Length: 111
Length: 116
Image 1: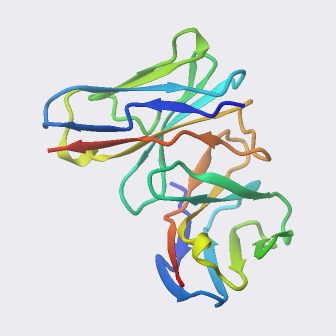
Image 2: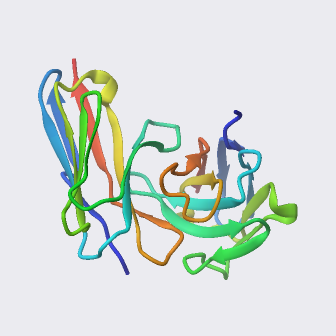
């Protein structure tokens, strides 16, 4: 069974701080996605990374796919209360058609 | 475009009762997924449809869960009988095609089920 472990599980920080969330697996993925989920809503796609070593930036969010395509990180610069939510990574294994979701990181940014 | 519609939003039932959830995917999306998300965890895939055929139901507890997608559009997920551990949010998602990675899935808002 493929597992995607995210760390930390919970994170509470002050507005303006930087943070990094990690997504790790022993399996290789052909692509990896990051989602953000707010209470009472479904996850919303933030980014898809497909190439080992790829870095993508979305405003204050920076996503990196590991060289071996087994891990990924999400870095948020100058966090804002609007960044509060559950961050989920999801990996697609080669030869399959389904994304496996990670365990999630619950972020709370305090004003 | 309209999003993925799910109903009901909330449901409270007693254990051993039956419950059904409904999902209407984005128009034209061939692939439909049902996920179970227990509080504080990531979503777990229950079943995946391509049009009206099942692609993957390996994680579906078939002794109590069933799902169908008649005519390849709307889908229903049923639990009969429900157990306490079925309390979770049931998310429906759709995508244009199988493994539509770059565009991701579009999720509905989910149905929060509480079994008491």
